[in-house]
Image 1 (cartoon, rainbow, N blue to C red):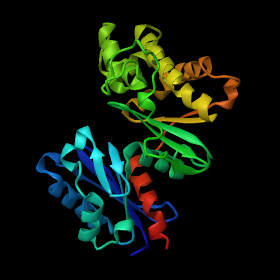
Image 2 (image 1 turned 90 degrees about the vertical axis):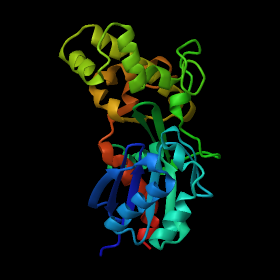
Image 3 (image 1 turned 30 degrees about the vertical axis):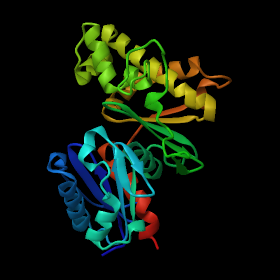
Length: 301
């Protein structure tokens, strides 16, 4: 069997997984229901089964939607994976797969998506990039000097909880006017419904593409708020490359002019042509590919 690393994207509904070699060639993919309601042991065994099927003999990476303790190898907080909180996922997987614990890597899902896009996707070749995922919430993964940057406590690039409007709508985190409360898929649906438009984002986006009108105006406002939020990264870190992914990222072509407008509105000293706004390109594969990238060091030894 060729030397390979396996990546796992653990979600509340599904486990997406795949294997790659150190050159970045995709060798295999699989997907199963996560079955979180069955408890942590059952989820762990499903992950282990996927890893065995894919041949995780040298390394395994796992992306999870929530906060992780990288030292202890466990999920500390995840609303969508509550049964996994505090469970020794890294050590249990290592035991079941016959791997050393250091060969099993646990990371936040937005961070592994950023790794995937930087390695094989839309941010390939960029030295610095911010990868933003638009879904139920807004996630962010930051690449600095070609490597994932997570910060001193591991919470870097939580762009969804930067403040855009302190008098804005209440966010799930408890604060007001967070970027997530204004420009996530959930927020866009809510804003559309409040304006008397369809809350179906696919239909809303199709209408906005088709002709000028209230749908296009609504998405312009959402996109501009997104750009205003991202401008904080631009001003603080002088980032020039931004990738937009996630389910709502499919509306990138409609959102892009307004995102750029919001970025430039709150930037300082940058010319429009210096900003590189792109759609993410790996889709649902970004998470597991990035997770596998975490384990490539083990697979290439």
